[in-house]
Length: 408
Image (cartoon, rainbow, N blue to C red; front, side, top):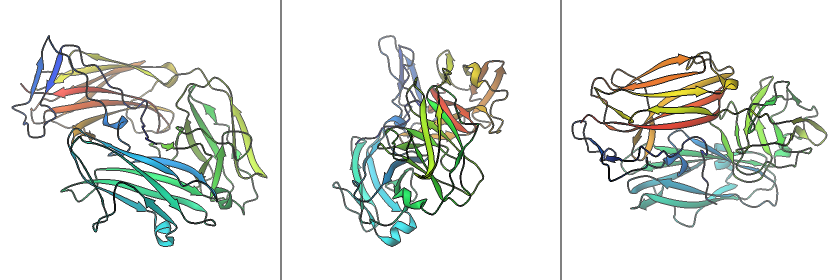
């Protein structure tokens, strides 16, 4: 199974027919020799986002195999690595301390073996590798959440540059077996859009976790591809196979999560939260016709240098309009804007500074973001702005817009 994620997080953009970007992605090019040409006989498409092609990221991605019970199939997935230069490095698989000590979960691959350095070597001159693996479960009685961290370490590096986490819940019903109090579903539970359902839970005080199901019983599964966001994983967790969801509790009086169904819904959804079939709570929620989309309009050629500014105008939908952008208050709707630079095939966060200035002008229903490179020190290359509409810190919708720094 090949896994692709980030369906809304990044889109490929056609960069103004008749634009050719040359040599900006070559690491050896300096500020003075970078080139950006306009050629009426050619056109180019902005480079495909690596975040839709690779299952690992500089900001760790998280996946969930869901619930495993005695006799269940061993879960499997495929790691996808893609970059614009040859792949030379190793993958490191690390299980959580409990699983490592008990030795009842192991990683199996057909494409390689672990070397003396603990890494599985990966070398591909085309810069693209699809690497299937599976988890072999050798226990029938243990209950708990298994964590497998996968890290990509390029040759010559001592620390990983990309990573992902895979979750697997063993016998989730046994985790809640001693709890005899049902959870409660909070009044804040509602559909924020026609795809995203915000859920508020009040778990039993003694419960280690709660099972969430997509139907009237605790065995009704969510469909693979669902992405759920929690305080522990605000970036989101992608469900890899049809399953219920086990949510570990942190001892708080209330828990929240955001379910992103990744498709527009029109029919009511019935949820069940509980610790066993005898102690559960249900709710039926009807999707709203609201959308979290933004209109993002670029102004002029996406080129920035000491003499040239570049601006993007954003218009927000009324349901998710923000009083203040980027104020750090994680309550209700928030619009965040990040800059990223393409480095070694991956987009890495870049902060606004005196060499690369990000400024804002906000209006009643949106605003304008302007990028400047006034000093000529910021490295030439490929960049992007990422606009993310959030709710209580959880992403509802995002869109990326490319721009280029060239000083010629």
